[in-house]
Length: 410
Picture: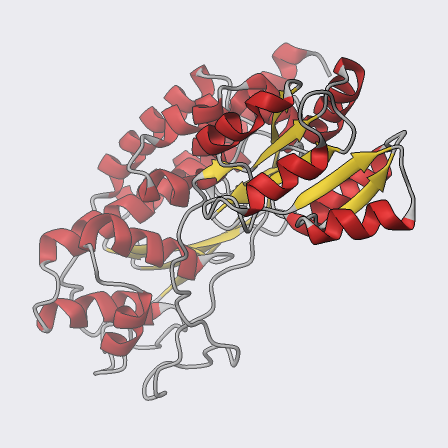
C-alpha cells in the first residue's frame, strides 16, 4: 500500500467515525453507543436527543474521572465522587447502566454544593472532547466498531454537552496534534525513563532533575499535564526526541481502583478497591559521587563507570583540596585512594569523620594494598569498605548499589 492510499484510508476511517456521531446527533438519538477497536480499547457515549450526557473511556474510567475532578474541581477527588454517588440512585435511565454512577456522583456533588453545574459541564465537555480525540487517533489505522442501543430516560438529564461543538473542538485538537507529528503517541500512555544515563548526558542537570520528577512511570501524559499545569501538546512535543530514541518508553497503566465506600447503589463494582496514595516528596537532585585519587587514569575510569550508572561525578586529584571540595559539594558517596602524596587516604578519611556534615557519608577505600592491617586501619579511621586496584566496573557498581542505591536524593 502506498503512502497516499494509506493516508486516504486513515482519513476515510476517521471521517466515518465522526460521521456516525454526527448522524446520531442530527437524528436526536437517545441511548448508548459502545465503540471498540481490535486492540482492546473501548468507549461509551450516552446521548439524550442527540446531545451527549456522558462519555467514558471504558479501559481507564477511574483515571479519567480522577483527572477531570483534579482539573476542574480542585480538592474534590474520586473518593468524594463515589461517596456522593452512594447518597442516592439516579433514576434518569430506565435501565441503569453500571457506568452511570460517575454521572450520578457529579450530580450529587452539585446537590451537596461541593461543585456547581459549570464544573460538571466542564468535566463532561472535556471527557467528550478526549473521547472523540481518541476515536480520531485510533481511527487512523484501525476499524472502529459501533454498537448503538436505544434507551429510555425517565426524565431529562440536567447537564448535557453539545455534540457538534465537542466534535469541532476535538477535530481542532487532533489537527494540532497531527501537525506536530504526534499522531502515533497516545496521551493515555505513560512515559517511563528506560536509559537514565543517556538522558542525563543529553540534558542539563536542571532539565534532568525536572524530567525525573515528572516522569515517575505512574501517570499518563494527560495526568502529568494536569499535575504540572502544562499544555498537553507542548509537554508531549518536549518529550518526543527522547521517545523516538528509546530513552523514554510509553507504556500502558492499569486503571485506578474504586475507593472503598460502603456499597449502597453502585452495581457490580470491583472487589479490589483503590485507596488514594499518600503523595511522596519529589526527588530533588541526582546523587553525587566524588573520587579522591591522584591518578588521572583512575579518575577517568571512575568517571566513566559512575556516570554510566546515572550518577553525578567529581574527581579530586589533589588531596590537599579534598576537604574544601567535599564541604562545598556534599557528596552521597566518596571513593578514596589510600596512597597519595602530601596527604594520604588515612588522614583524609580521619578528617572527614571529624566533620559533622560529612561524618555519615560512606567512604570506599581504593588501593593496591590488600593487607589485613590496611583493612583494619581503614576501618578504624571510618572507611565503609575496601576495594582493591585495579578497579573493575563490577566492584564499583556493587559499591554504588550498596551505599546509595537509588539514582536521586529524596
